[in-house]
Length: 198
Image 1: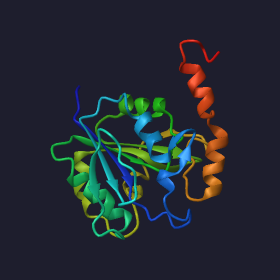
Image 2: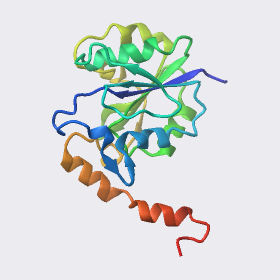
Image 3: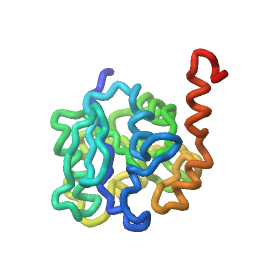
Image 4: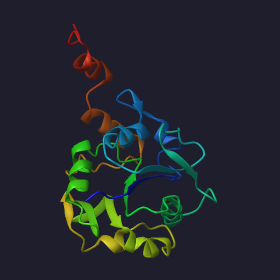
């Protein structure tokens, strides 16, 4: 069954613990925010929506939605993302500061989704990325405060992520940990070079 699924990437956090600008910070040769775009690039999605703070780099191919007001909590980001996807049968919610979620995890989620709810989990705790059908949009739009869809996902089916894959970039130390887990840009260029890098 073909579904109209919209990707909503949340990228409007204040990054206060990082000192600001974390999504523009370089990670393995590209900005942190570009990793989620790369991991979801091959998915058969009807729409790609980025809910972003003003200092967040643009993502080609994404419809950008500004967080309004700029200091609004996460519930507002979610509501804006849902509102930007009229006609969607479901939304795939991802965080821009989780750059190590593999492309295969996103693909498996879409394949396993039954139209209701599906979440990721780490050590038994639900976390993004998550898929929610349109029947849950009213509940998402009604959320208030600095919280996401966690309450809707507590008893949802879950696909596991390792602690490394679920790493959330909140501090410069987190960025350093992520960099240590990814190959450097030179290794990536060598792997994709026709000459094999040498």
